[in-house]
Length: 81
Image 1 (spheres, rainbow, N blue to C red):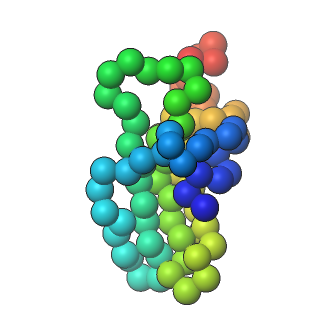
Image 2 (image 1 turned 90 degrees about the horizontal axis):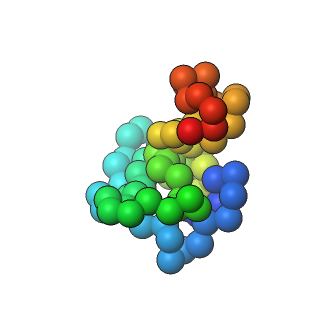
Image 3 (image 1 turned 135 degrees about the vertical axis):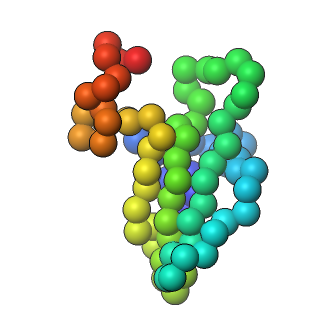
């Protein structure tokens, strides 16, 4: 479930996290790790996701770099950067 809904395929081998999840009210909040060194074009996007503690369903996702024109802050990324 952590690798789904990123706007492109993200495999389990590519997705990683370095910090434990945080529980807040009825949410489990999970971040993701991005490579520090060489960046590849199709690296997984950096995300923070929240899941319902009872159902496991994802309640929201925040992309640290906007993935589409609808994402918050997309207008600040010029020329598809």
